[in-house]
Image (spheres, helix red, strand yellow):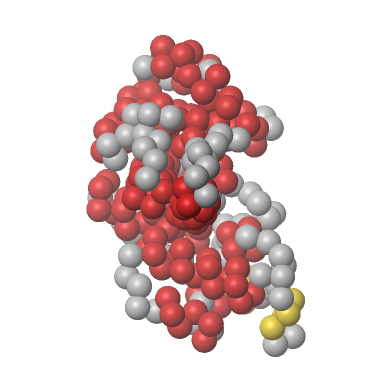
Length: 260
């Protein structure tokens, strides 16, 4: 992926543009892409392949479903009632994910056994669980969460959970997906600042880590709770930590910065 970034000036320009739109350093976007491709993608799909795949996703009939139940029907179940009043796409899907974890994950309800797996892996990956797509290796659930922010900042049409093909096309299209990558990173930076009191805006290794593991608000809340306890006990506070994705990104940061 380093070779791709080095040889493709258009891609670098697009990364700069999206970073500017979302008020983040381009290195955050580069870090997310490098981390995901180094560890998650076996044979690096050339950018051209992503354009071709984006078009092919429009022609096959995809669905977001588990065991024959479409996600649009699933979220009408009474357990999701508390999410009904939420209008922002991030809050709505975050709420639904929490309901999944609390009420369905790993449980048997009305004769249906639900896997002990993430919401995004259970309902939002038609080929195999844990699959991510495109240049940003995005999960469709993440794209749905970011839909309103991307609509507001980049002017892209809002995504509809009832139209999986368009969701996949958006994720697979390198011209569209970078906005979602940038929005995801912006959300992580804001969560850590507003919830945990840490400014991670100059640490691409941390944002690459959060991009990889997801759920930045829950993680920021857990870190805050841990530090509240530590402060009360007179102990030094715990700092946010990188995983191996983040470590790799920070290790290669000088090389990546040189490209920009």
